[in-house]
Image (cartoon, rainbow, N blue to C red; front, side):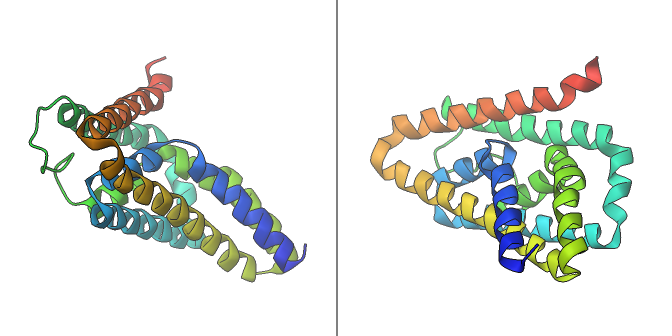
Length: 202
């Protein structure tokens, strides 16, 4: 496989995981509603966590996370319930307009949501590892650099687009539109939390 062919293949595969609505997708919207700066800080937190996971993947330690996926799912679901319920309270008028959707900084929320996202980690261990292995077999170690850059660029690109659109939506839709968007993203977090823990309840 040629370098440019692998770049396109890897980037397309990575982009798909981030354009599918999930925790980071909705967190980008929630933080973007609060403004560009919180959204960018959330994006920086998420990409920092992804870079850390990629470094762990390079050492092979990410395979150990397979053994703690149930615990990771519970922790991730708790985090989603916490942020989702905060968003719902905000949308329903339970908090002042200028308060954060949840306690803690935007960077910390982006970081925690990525590290505690078992769906992303499972994708990294399965689809991501397959894409990486295919590149390593034909291009050598340069494939790891390409794959890592593709993950970070696709994640940051999707988040940045959502943050910008959400922050501009504040000016276009007014308070009612923002409350509706916040309510939808909050409810989405709660649904995703249920989906995460549902297999553990069977």
